[in-house]
Length: 189
Image (cartoon, rainbow, N blue to C red; front, side, top):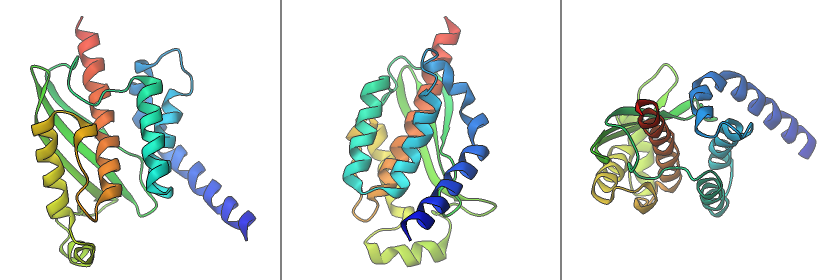
């Protein structure tokens, strides 16, 4: 049974990697001397999707430290930047759009969007099913967006009860957007 699960999971990972590399190619420039940087970012997404929350937290903190990843808008160019995860096992991408002005995040818009379908916030059936957890995407995501604007740091955004994994998806896509914003600042020099 363990071999079968490992084979299926390996196939899923292989298929997912085949789908996503080009979406992350621009990020390689952030750590040009580390040939594993892009893969490590993609791997962090999959750890978030399949691991216990303590392992997710540890992996996230380890990547932040190892690569000195941005969690705020310091050193970022003005503009609107998007961070997108690979698809998860349920065919959702985790997408954030950040507007940065004078090294401050002034607007944030986050959602988890189904392949060829709606975002979780607009999906009334999904929200109804998730309400038993104590929250819905329509409540949790705007809460995290407001916290980010107020606190100006992805790691200071707190989870809404019932949306702990969504917090790490939010942080993940936010980090991707902030990497792009930092790269934009470097390219303007």
